[in-house]
Length: 243
Figure: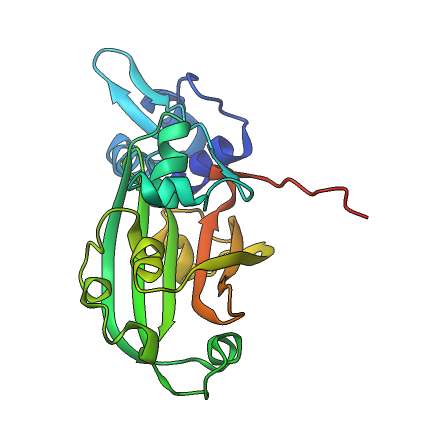
């Protein structure tokens, strides 16, 4: 029951501001007890998609998507202003953002990541894994992989808060000036573990994005492996009509 309601909200069948069917309606529809329905509604509310209002019942929450602007989100001015990309774009959408750090430390580079970084598979890299929330709901996981020789003398990158402007600002402070960011996107269904981590229905659509941060010397100094709830993001790209 809970999964069906969550899926209806994500699919737009139940829209922001709509009332979730009442307990009596759900009892009749599913043929179960009121206690079972109440337990299911706990799961629906835990998804962050609905909230209970005293005397009214449960209502679908408004969840405007975060808009990603590839030509804007990594502007140097954001770093100079002390804003990491996710916080800057969330602010632009009027959302409240939170970042939870899950892991920071050494890790053996997976084969695909090592190839992108230009290091040997299994070489030691610094991994920074985060879970991002918007208005209290998990919407994105991201793991950054950075070459050990680049980060070993930048102590801020081993802390939960790398300081104003985030990881990219600290890398530029150390002389790694960025020339471009290369992103590869793939839409697919979430695995069971991914659905659980992002509070999604099983098999819900997600966007898998891998980003390479490339310096003026042509070196990739970070690979960020990101998974996003597809209904929470709009991707906007500016493509110059060059000769």
